[in-house]
Length: 83
Image 1 (tube, rainbow, N blue to C red):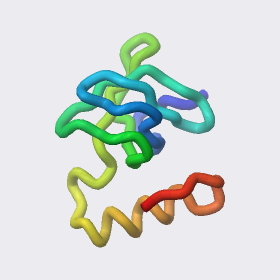
Image 2: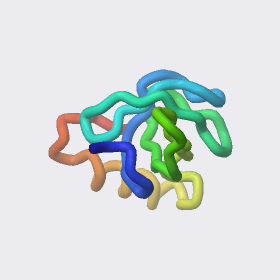
Image 3: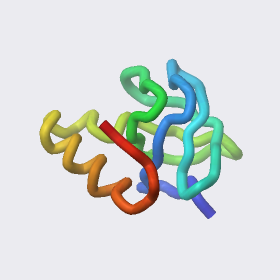
Image 4: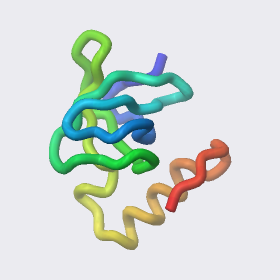
């Protein structure tokens, strides 16, 4: 089952602060902690309350170059294109 703490995913809709994310091929309602997230951006799951995930932008604590490399590493081979 997806949505576990530490899982990675991608925003399906804008998260400002609520929206939808995809984690392990499942779509979840989510609330973002921190800055708003655009569709297609990588996210990290911080926790879950009921059927809503608490997430943050994956690169929030990383430099831009490191964040780009991390997004590529996470989604390579999953059929998800990332910028």
